[in-house]
Length: 273
Image (cartoon, rainbow, N blue to C red; front, side, top):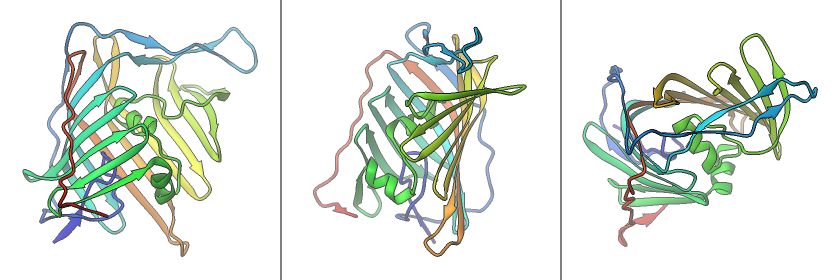
């Protein structure tokens, strides 16, 4: 028997709570279907950035301007101690303010969660308990800065850190946009043809984060990544290397202006972890 739960809405697994038996065989995820509701979605262009050398060359990024997102996805994770293949994830989002999800496997709902700009709340349905952490508390547990914007980025492929771009480098195929957020060093890799972020690297001390986006598809004029991979690497307190890999694959994505509901409550009989 394995115990697990989705600690962050994507399956950044920090402890174990949902009891279920699972096979080791990895299932292939179905082809994704992407819907666009309520008419065309307008693309919002972030401010154009001039290169530090002051040349006329410019760097531009495209982000979608949507109100609500609804998605059905699959999430997998691997670590040295454990792993989960193709857990079901249902997502609802109000852009820049709220992420709601349910997660489970084999038809069993294991966790429900709500993420605001201030905190992450996870309800373990099977074990009648819940966990609530502020982002500073969550960052301390992971050993690297985590924010709402980072979690939203994993879903939609946006730039995770909103701090000023300090340096821009160009190679044969990408622009590298470098940032700092406190002690975190960040490199964003931008495809100049699609104007989309394809990879993000961040490091803080011995902890490293790698986020990559794949399988872009078009919703109206918006390129949306149907797959993302998050790798967290570092060392334990005893110096042992450790690595966790989380893969998110969207099966269906809907962008809409229609108001969505985010039902969420914690039963009084549930205990706090």
